[in-house]
Structure formats: structure tokens, C-alpha cells
Amino acid sequence: MWGVSVPLAYILGIHLELGLIGIWIAFIVDEWLRGLLMLWRWRQGKWRQMALGRRGIETDAS
Image (cartoon, rainbow, N blue to C red):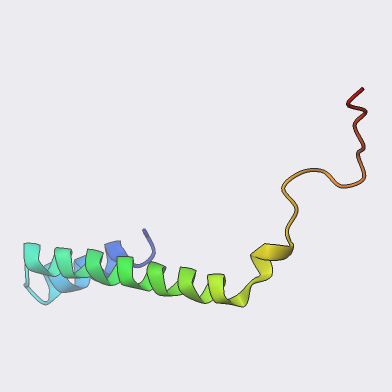
């Protein structure tokens, strides 16, 4: 978030003199970018092969 929204908010809000509207546009662009990256990550499917716990540890439930 900091790497995209803050510099873009500075560029749009101050440098291009869009003010508060430019800052909101920067936040919207940041949200869209993160959403597209998460969609790309989801479609790769590598997350399905990750284990939630430690491997090789057996517990005796009795």
C-alpha cells in the first residue's frame, strides 16, 4: 500500500494539483492493483499445495 498509494497520491494530489480528488484516485488505483495481484495469485493455485501445520508430526489421540 505504501509503495503505490503514497507516491501516487503525492503525484496526483500535489504535483498535478488535483488535491483531495487526486489522493482518492490514488487510493482507488492502489486497491485495484492489489485486487488484480490477488486475483492473479489465486488463479496460479500454488496456495492449494501449502500445508497448514507441521509435517511429519504424528499425534496419538488415545
